[in-house]
Image 1 (cartoon, helix red, strand yellow):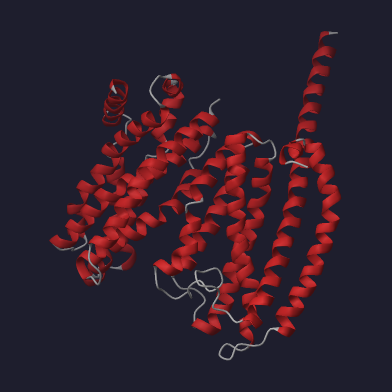
Image 2 (image 1 turned 135 degrees about the vertical axis):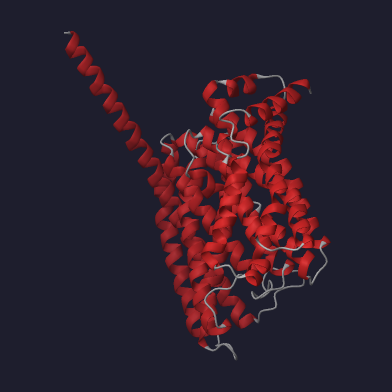
Length: 222
Length: 252
């Protein structure tokens, strides 16, 4: 337990120091959301309508940004080999690293939603809905992406490959995240239905992600 | 002959050499019957007219696109759990064939959708999930193509194949979970098929023919992959041998 706690704290500390790139995702999120009105024109009604979808898409792309560093940095300085040899189960260690990654990159995206939502002229209800669905959904993005990050390290290349492998797997999360955020505003079904499925997807990825990533790391680095 | 006996690539090549001609003959025979049934025996639909014939291509392709990922999932377990030496050859050989069938399924579907639904494409649950399947096939092929060492690539691909298998039940049940454009399951469902026998029999004949075609292509592709790996290791041996000779000469 202490080992996992130590890894969690260490990863968070590294992320906020120079070269860590914890807030890079938020900057990218801001850039993507700013670009959209340039592309489709500053039509307030249209932006309000597709706002939740834009925010979800921006968060999805932003969560991909730092993923390749999740294991690569540890692989480069040799820490990953120590983690592999450590007494703590690799699945749990990997999950702790994923949690640290989510706290430093996923959570800031959720916190940025109120500001970005104002840019898209969303009302308070819609902003709340998007923030809540992102809070429930971004862990799934991190833990699914973790599989791609492990593959990228095991294959010693993957900067380009990672998004191609990860994005198809995130489609269900995107679908239910956006539909939950939209039903909160316009209906027709209750907010609960898609939101509960989103939570289920997150719980599933919390299990599948660490196991698949740990298996990949064990297979790839021997 | 048990599955483990085929772990020896030379034995597998002998087996493939013996079985392939029979498979080719069986495929041709099955297609002769299936096409005759589908084109001449099966009646036109009272609403759709002759376009219903597209179904005899579309449905077998869809089945095989999913069946192929299922086969790759079993092969992935073979790679990771049992370390069967031919399992990742089987998976690697299956991926392009599965991608081709999935593409044909999407293509024939949109050709059929244009006259019947009035659109080539709709973001319907089943269409979308099959498109995701197609993209995942391409991602897997890209993964195999980006790593030189076949063993390493095979193990990484096996993990991804297992994770991607989550999509299969989503495709199968998408028509029941989301009631959108694509029709619900009508062949394999609780309570028996809802298709008339005059169409169902030709459909099964075509499905058997396509499955035989898949097995033929897959066996041939596995044989090619084994030969390709042998060529690769021979080339590497030759490079090393040349290098040794050069060192000996330089010393002498």
